[in-house]
Image 1: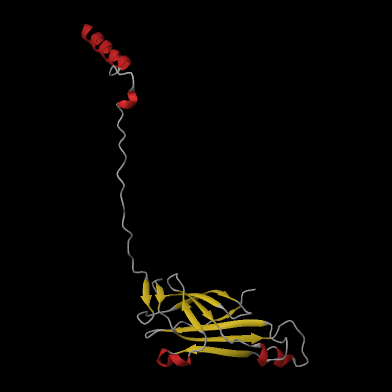
Image 2 (image 1 turned 45 degrees about the vertical axis):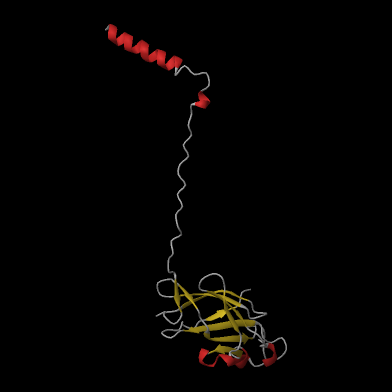
Length: 182
């Protein structure tokens, strides 16, 4: 039993007196964790429009006044599509469906259109300006010279829609008529 007491006293004295140092800060060594630099993972999240077997177009914005478009192109796997430059874009102008007319059957069905297209085999005759943004798969379209009002009576065009089709060597997107942002 005396050994148990002696061991307890010795352990207590070491805890109380420590290492017999008045300044513990000098003895502390701070070890910083190593800085681990993880290289960015390069993921091929983009596919060239001519290599895509399917094209999906998502319209992000459509300004009725200017015809300016922003849209995103992806393939069947959700990868961004780059280098798109062949397109057919058609703008539609319709009358206000709530306005009265003396010709009710014809009034609700008329529309005016203006087409913008580009085929890279004849790029000198492209109409409009399609540009890829900094974001992979995102594009803007400038409908230079869009004028649906001149094709109808003054103030008759009230509803604006657009249809966009992008062409690659293997695929084109489905055409959907999309209304302008309010």
